[in-house]
Image (cartoon, rainbow, N blue to C red):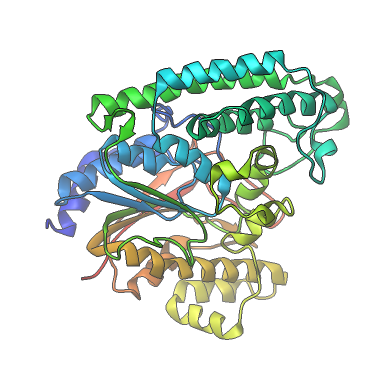
Length: 444
């Protein structure tokens, strides 16, 4: 095995002395299926590609990549483009749906044919029955939009192929986002102003048709790229891809042999979803129109019990924490202890949010390290937000957690995030415009 120093050297060579290299400013195009859905806070594909290139060039026998917070599947896609096997997990059913589409099988010609059949069924549909019912339905969708989305939903459910239905559900998810009464300028559910709603006449069928045909082009491009690299045979990816829906604090890597992953490359949330990126709120409306059984048999319908339920289940979603647990976390991370001390005297929810999130993130460390092989590498892309006027040094806090688990620091990379769509402020915390790529090696 090559040394940690050689990886750090290779990363420095790639950067080539350019301070803003890792920002990929003006060079963050989403090719090869990366643009199938506008998912919150997606990683930059070019950054992930560069990191994987560096580790594959400087390390021996890289075969399997893991991501405990798989999100939109940027790491998944870049790993498969290199012919690597992949293990991914997320607590959000919409993320798992999107990743399962990207993982294939990929049959562009057949998919195009079946998608056009579906569009034909939609055009012929005349029923006025609204297919779904959930709290707030009439608030978030006009009756005309409900009718159009219902026609689309009926047409998708009439399709026999699960692979095709999943592809079409992704297009429907994007259609829901674009035709609901929620603002598209934020990932939170935020109702448009009354005068703005009165002036809008979104056409779900027109939007779905456009999104579907655009996604077919992206799907075909992904298939061509995988086939050109020799990683696709008869539509099926030749490596192993394992995707699970679940909590990375408890279920990540379930069924995966311990020590079987060579690299972990991930970007966890930077704080609780409510005050950073509300993945659950973003997903709530689309998931209510999708047949959850098509995502997987393990999808719990209760995740849609409220608009905040997925976020509540996510890291930092619950602020209940045992005092003895707080003492343990303070001992594990002096940086966290210093941050908590600095937040004393501010409203209690500031302190509680920071410690609850840090505790949940620390709970992810052991399951993540379990799947990594001894000597394996872990790349964590992190942002240090501000809470109550105090910077929360998440990169240093996580590094201290990892070092307590025999990991050693290889290098840290600072990057600005000009293209990562996130909130800039809210009433509790301001988010960030810079990230750290933390690279550590698991001890033997």
